[in-house]
Image (cartoon, rainbow, N blue to C red):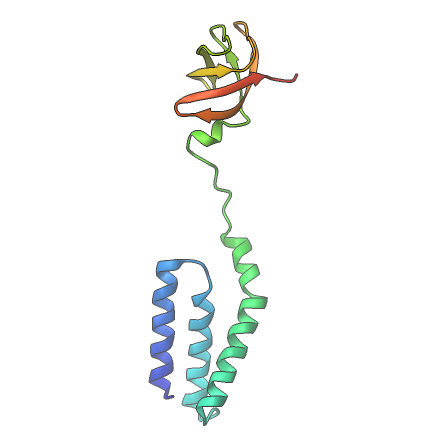
Length: 142
């Protein structure tokens, strides 16, 4: 392959990386650029050698640099939907009787809640699940 063909491979891999953002095709693109430069200087005369060097570069980049990049890119995303309430603690603002709804206050918001046990008003509860728009709660252990 020629220098321009390897650059085209690098551009295609770079474009795929932009759409997937998994940091896999980035290493293919970098390896393709490296092979393109080696081809340009006449160091890789045959396609077989070019492909072998491309595979070795890609493998080395994935093994040694991807974990480092993933550490920097890894974000501490917090769950922002209702599932984030599971494990949270709140207070009952109305009594909750099994098979009937009550209300709890969790993170400053009032929610309809159900429980498998009878809970009086002003009892500390823990959210153990979600059922539609209702919180499943139980009495919190101290």
